[in-house]
Length: 357
Image: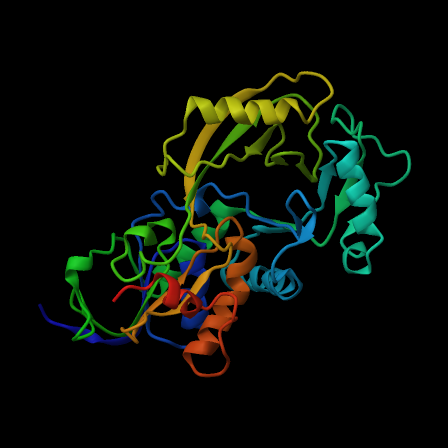
């Protein structure tokens, strides 16, 4: 097989991680090819796309949000201008408290200067209709929503216009690491961004991944749904005149992209708990994907222990749309020797415990 002219990077996977990184490299002038089979089972196909600075039951600041979230906002705005389209939206999160204890924790957090800038009370007298605010409701600011299908389609269009996309699954049997050749393509470095399927990657399956399947529903209803993202045990997000999305579930056992009746029932129960009275809904769509979560909740970035030209940019879990823009820049800077990797994301921290040559 004749070889193509040498390229700088092969990026495996065009989920949100691979898309952000390949875009960063191409914009720097690097000769880059992306291999992707059409996002099959990728988390980005069903992700909420929410950028949320305050998360979890303890209402803590999201990891690296101080630097990553402002960067993500600028990144997506620039991408919209570069490619065309609108898929980034500044949008508040309306947090409905589930208990008196949660409401008290909220009040405590709001007194902390580190949190006060992100948290606010609704305007006095504001009504949320049928939403259950019996324990109180609060706003999280500096939050946003990226429309995953539109954003991923924009990336794909960008890659196709530059001849940088190979719409096919990556086949390890065609990889010759010694000669730096994959299927007739000679490369300098190969970067794996294949999401949860890293658990089967012969070079990175040793890393501590904990993938989690997630399911979402698209619902149709005459119920008034606010423009805010609403959160209480799950989230609802308006995405049409009379439709909204509801998510999401967590399943670490059944890692596939098949929607299930059990998850559907769980989601509808979450929905019921958000409203004071029952609402009529029609299920329009059900989708599932698998998040590339890790045991430490930190991504796995860096180089293989004994193969210096095989790299990983993966493991962003449920926060890919929030973190990948910033870390794609950090990773590219590291590749070109301009900065170090984030110490909490550098996969070398796992070598002593998990790597077995």
